[in-house]
Amino acid sequence: MTHGAYHYIKQAWKKPDTKTLRERMIKWRKSETFTRVEKPLRLDKARALGYKAKVGFVVIRARLMRGGHKRTRPKKARRSKRMHTRKNLSMSYKWIAESRVAKKYPNLEVLNSYQVGKDGIHYFFEVICVDPSKPEIKNDPTINWICDRKNKKRALRGLTSAAIKSRGLRA
Image (cartoon, rainbow, N blue to C red; front, top):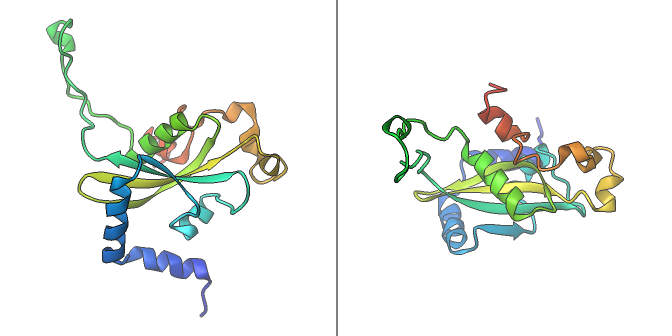
């Protein structure tokens, strides 16, 4: 049975070439926290999540520090009952990456994201964003829902796929 190109891209990402990926991550570590990329690295995943190679779609690679999800203890001005630090942050790294990109680029709306790498210090995500002010987006019936006012700041309000999963609304 023959398969399409996206099938083979997906199979290649199941066992990535570690040497090439390691070299990429060394470059990514030295680059900015948010880097706009020309094309998505995982084209099959990006297409499955709604990316199209047209004007108005932007892919941003985000770098996050791993660990440190435990709340810090308040330094002063609390009674002992309120000084506890037992709770951990319930947000997933993916949701954190999406919300940081949404804050950094206020003119774009976050559509979805996926992980492209992980090393001992950082997580790397590619976040797919859409510019709702572009006429190509407004005229496209499959994506023009994002131009509606009720879909503003989706990532910051917890309405993206990663956020819904982190909030426990989907298993």
